[in-house]
Image (cartoon, rainbow, N blue to C red; front, top):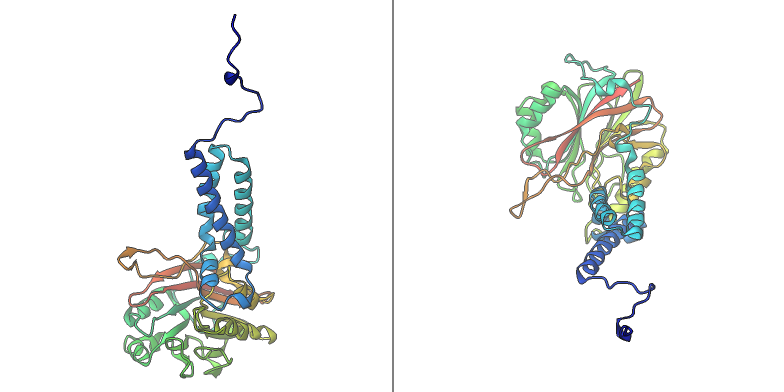
Length: 357
């Protein structure tokens, strides 16, 4: 028997060559995972790196990264890519831990927060509906706003980017009869699309057209009695993080965070131009303020954009930048959150049920 040719011999240590398709898939999966990791890192970017649009806008989309990670994990598991699977699982664990509050209710959220508010509202209710809306330069549909207030029994309404024309249209539509008390933010050259306003059913005290040196629109506030509590209501609209603001976004949120120094109990509503995944926003909350959406365990409430198309391309609401914020350990809680599309503006209205123990 003739021996086999030398060139036909193989050893057990040789590895089969990977096909170009497999290499391309691996390259693509690792590239996607690398992008996910980089965007996740934006969640911890220091303020000094957040003066432009890139990092803040990247961090705003972090909740959507879980979809990419799940897709990569499925492919990696099916194709037996162990290292990639491990890295992707780690990414998913981080994403779940960061957002667990949106899906796991805090124990202190009261049962009443998921019940309908009474149809007959009074100025001293301890369970009331609240709402915040960016009206896009005052272009929002006034009659629809009043209809929402009436149908949802809203007792506290905060709005941003409000124009004088919108206030007149709201009055003509009957808002003053539903919510007779109001305070309008001080108009100025730095208005961020318009002024901020607060309307309430309860009588206001200590109303102020501006309580903070916020870079952007003035911050109006007032105090109302809610049950046995004296609560300071605030409507806020910090400057957006875009090129040319020279750090005003950071400064705006820093100034808003100074409210934590005072002993008042707060309900702060508005377009914060930031999400839970912005380190600047979490620093503003500190350990004394909480975000209602992150606490309620009812999922995300994406509020922007509300316009269904951008450059003829369908666009769903992608980020949650409108918030209801309240004082921690104050006997207050906010739940039963929902978003409502209002014509004429690019933000959804955010509504919640405010419970005061």
